[in-house]
Image (cartoon, rainbow, N blue to C red; front, top):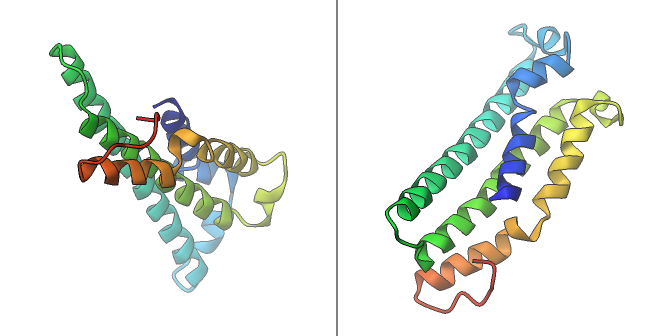
Length: 156
């Protein structure tokens, strides 16, 4: 879950709270109703915030269920482990899409190394390529377990 938590943290730093902070005046400039770009900016922020929140809810649910299972003295069965691994990888996809979208709406100022968007974008790319959150592996593993097959990976 460590890479998933890092993904969530990177994405969270680029939500509406920090976005307004690193684009001073930019959002206000685009907000008048006649400016369609302002609406698309706000829609991008809303969609990214929703994806990040969905990723957080997945993580909280999986952690709560895993902790409840362990507290009851049981171990996580293969189906729960496969689902949790799938969810961690999907969280990565959600967070990566959210950050990619926010980076794109940051405009050219986001390309500077000194800009917070650039740092968060690089962090997201680095973490989202970790094998623990590789969708192709986790998705296939979940599918194999769901159909009663051997997971065919040690990453479970």
